Image (cartoon, rainbow, N blue to C red):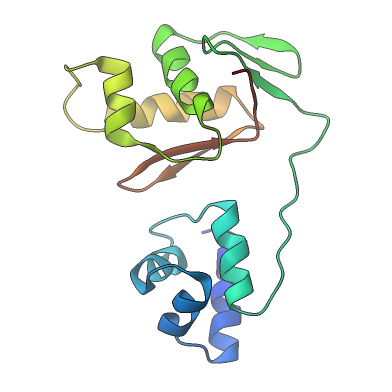
Amino acid sequence: MNSLILKLRELREQTGQLVQATSKKCGVSADVLMAWESGGQQPSADELVKWAAGLGFELTPTPLDDQHVVYVDAEGNAAVDGKRVNLTPKESRALQRLARTPGQLVPHAQLLRHLYGNNPPPGQTAVRGLMAKLRRQLTPAKIEGQWGQGYIISGIVAES
């Protein structure tokens, strides 16, 4: 589990604040907050900032190391630190869809439709495997899976 998430849970417990009170202060449901604290769901960077604020702390996210640049164009071609990344057509299509809205959730069903049209493969392992490969190839970009919801990409420079 993310050490920052553990720290925020510890801070909530140390201050004696109940999950329900913290959830109201940071603007998320108690169920979502409990899912974050248990590691069942990952909050976005903005949600982490709000969660910390709900506990009375200021959290300032830091950008990725300026020495690393992940560039994605409108066709789904990618380069890391100026070196082209060879992607399969499916990887390129997935990246193209994620890069269209960096920092925003792309629902799993929408990603499946973008990749496979009206004939998606059974189960979710095809997309999970694809995302795992993209994560390895596009370091330091970050592709986060929101369990049961979809994926979010961050740390890229996207061409419109």
